[in-house]
Image (cartoon, rainbow, N blue to C red; front, side, top):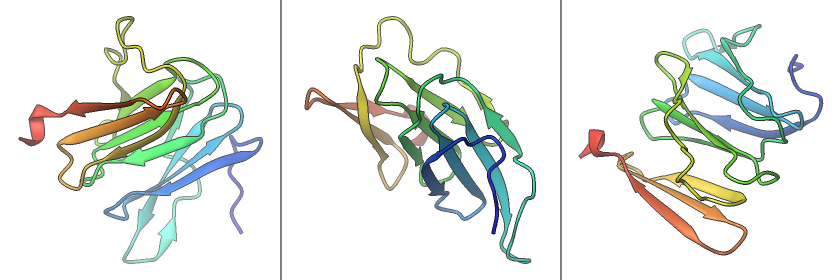
Amino acid sequence: MKTDQGALSATALKVSPTGEYVSTASSSGIVNIYSYEKSTNALSKEPIKEVLNLTTSVDTLAFNAQSEILLTASKWKKNAVRLLHMPSLTVYQNWPNFKTQLKFVTSAAFSDNGKYLAIGNDAGSTYLYNFKHYS
């Protein structure tokens, strides 16, 4: 059995579509990312990245189909969404910005080809974003 060091209480778990990564979220807002080696069937003992960008419970985790982007979101604070670039393990600092009004995010999903990102909120609205990189 594996314990997640940064988690006070686990709130979400997601395996990347390519099987390279496992991400865990906690009630404290910490998201840990572990590498997974398919050939040895082993999960890294320590997180390869600890994301501390959110301060409220993380409820939503979503990878794009290529496992290049991880979305983390909290429904407990307005616009509490972050995107992580997996190859470099860095959080995008330019999105969301002050003009982005997502409100309280309750769900998110990437399209199968990674070209689109849909984000739903507590008001029943869905926002659709286009990633031109995957056009």
